[in-house]
Image 1: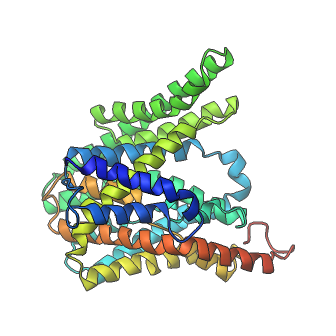
Image 2 (image 1 turned 60 degrees about the vertical axis):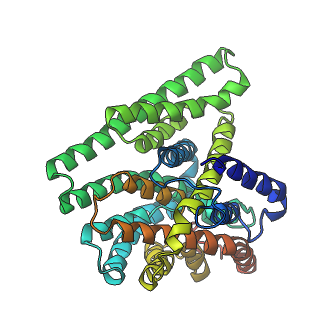
Length: 411
């Protein structure tokens, strides 16, 4: 632990020095941070030697996801999104449930040692996507707006949707293995969701009202306008947790509430929370490479690798294709949207939450190993292909514009 912080700081400095050069290339920030963690981790240089179950790792991951959830949710503007809601609505309403079902089926077939609740838990662990792993896909203005915004909204919302699903399935898996009683599991999930929603609504509303009232009277400094969302995310998380609620649900609901109320004030208030989320995400991927991926590679098996490949291809792409039936989306669009479903931050945090209760699941090691390897493969595959495939897709779209007689939501 002595050299962990200096090592992490050094990786951040190195990436800062080259960040402008690698922007828009096949070398992404999560790739650099994960590789840096691998090189400096306990199974290599030994500088970042932290226990996966330590409070430091848990706190880092939880703070990161809470900030990201709040920031993503606070930007959701359903009124403005109405013209482009078709794609994310289908990806979340049809594609996400089908992805979980396909992931469950693949786990039962490929990882036969897992009990059915564990197979379902693995599917939920790997269901949320992380747009940061393929940043070019959601930031390049040359891409069709509906595709770019659709993937971005999907990534922003499916983390929040998957949190309660994860809590429910984890409780079912614990009850099935006998680690948790059925009644206790139901009560636990009810409290986590219920108190999480209440804490989120309260914290988001309080922060938005402070912004509106103080802002209208010119009582708030511009710097503190940026601090408000960070304070609101912190308030939501820290109020929910002592009550027995889920801090992640609180952060997500808090972001939705804050964004809905404060939008009438106008202006931009998310710079600081976005930058804080980026820094914490960077450190999380460094720790992921050092603490999780490094040890996992030493236990890699063909069945685990096969599931990881299936999870990033068939398990994601087939449900997306089914979700887009009837939209007149063309094959390159379906393939492009289907491929860019990277797995990242939310899965890492879910892995850490499972580790909080060691021995709860009979095949916990296999389940977590598979999730970690899938995220590692996603960091590499989606990072390396984001920029070149985005360029190729954009070039195809320019050569083949939508015919005017096609539906407006087609891409």
